[in-house]
Length: 401
Image (cartoon, rainbow, N blue to C red; front, side, top):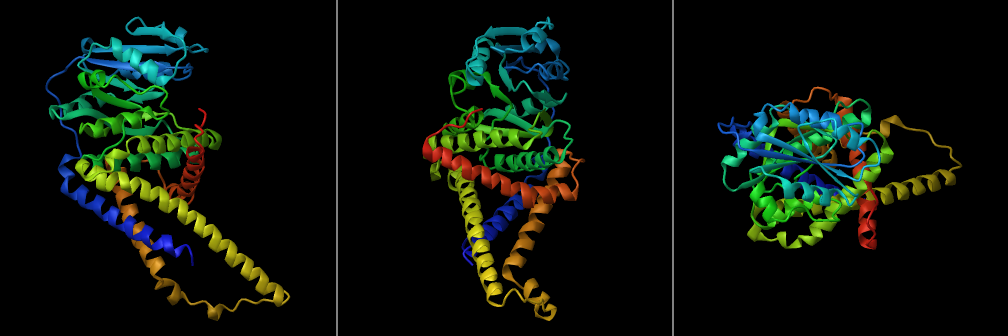
């Protein structure tokens, strides 16, 4: 079968990567938890706001409720030309700074807030993201390493209810856990909706790139291009609102996938052994995974279509007079099929890593059915999103928000 050309390499790579992750978990098991801090530096929290009337109050309140000295935090909210009630809601707070400006996009809004930030550290927080009370204390502990300039927490969907949201909970938790593992090898390339920066680094870098639809990924790659260290606090959480409907998920993921391809091309110089494991393993792994997924789906469709046409043609020759002979079905042949064996091994490693991730990211809402839906259905959707995004990228057409 044509698809075997992709299936076997995919299995071997998946098993190798899975075993590598398990090895890194065992090797760094004492580093999976954060250490407490003894000093409390001044922190600026920068929140860009555009039409977030339904969630902005929850976000600001979560920052105000952080377990951190109140005189050591300033909150800067940038109203980016909202047309709803966001600005009115922000004005209800007397202890935050509000910058009201015309709509120019998230990156420009963030940079405006960064310009006025007085803190030694700056937390850039999406307006629909709620932080756990211990987040600041745990994240700041990683800055004891002078080489660390960016720290991110675990990111989780906020109160997932329907199946699509719960599947994304699986996705986010696995992503957070693997980010923690890659951080041990200086391979972390994420600075998502809640990230804490050394102010000196962020301002020296002139903030986020304007008109980049995945400005967080660009920032992470830019940091890596300067050999700046990124760390992760696995045991504290920022909760974000995720798409509840397929239409919203589709638009979000097309945008993310396109932005990732755009930034990987922009920072293609990182695919170099001088950037260590990032350049020779983690970044190539992203492209290899995308390529294998796209080719695998394409060849599988060709195989299935060809087989189906052949079967229909055969049945037509015998006037569709076909009887199933159960004795011809060999269970033993099925079991000893190398593809089945490798698939079971890969699946066993994957579910082991997921169970460890559940423990360390404190997931309780996920059933086996949800996990299997993620593995066998949702993952196919993600590959489809990559295929569509690749067409956008090749055509040079940027997807809309």
